[in-house]
View: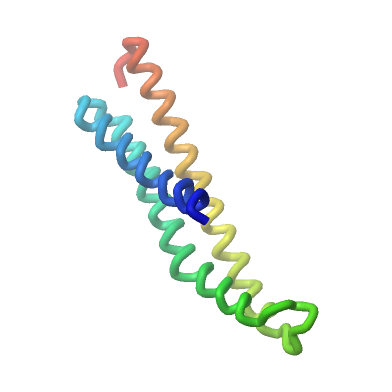
Amino acid sequence: MPHFALVFLGALVVTVAVAMIEYRKGRRTVALWAGVAAALYVVALAVTFAVNIPLNNELAAIGDPARAGDLSVVDRFKGVWETTDIMRTLLCTAALGCLAHCLKLHGRGAAGVPD
């Protein structure tokens, strides 16, 4: 679990650090895109902690599905879980796109091309 948490939360820490470093260097456009990426990731984390983790905990409380008597709980949660999972996927993909744009802008800046 510690390795998972390191990656799961470390992505946010590194993204915020990039935004702050680029801002201090005067690279406002890169910092803005990194900030947007961080904001998108925060929303994805909020959805995860507010919706998906509680649902996962409720499903885990059922125990072994082969021995569970009432699987209607799974059917009840499936729609909500799938919808929020798609939402998290889109948010993280958009954050990744913002970070890719940061790399492009950073590379252009290193090559002497202005923002």
